[in-house]
Image (tube, rainbow, N blue to C red; front, side):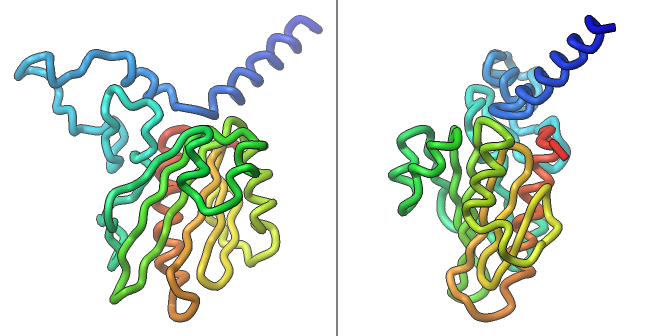
Length: 207
């Protein structure tokens, strides 16, 4: 009986570890040969195994651009410019202050993308992958995720005025508008829901 309980505990630990870092499907893509070099009969490299999700290049297991919503389904929002990514100490370049906090709690990689709204309005999406669910939860709480109004998006979320904070699995992310007045919440939540959908499709579900 004790042996079976120990085995079950070990299996649960493996599942928890598998939830963080590059997903299994991403890892497979990084080790497989480039389909484009396999000849005209090879599968379309632009096709994604997850319906509606952008494809990830086979050699980019750590590329987080698959998380970024495109213009489809975002209403008046559209990506503005190219995304920027950082890993490890390069986070100091990517964000203005606070990098130490992320690194202390297991930061692995981040991606940032701006979205153009109506007129001059812009929204900044910042996504951080942590090494553990607990790390993502800690960052969410320290960033103020427990003090604003619950948004009921993802496994934890709050929205206040011009920004929203969210957590899903090992990922913490925020959406911030370039101004504090106006009807901002619909666009903030539209972006957040699109990111959560992508994370859930890749198995980032812990609650």
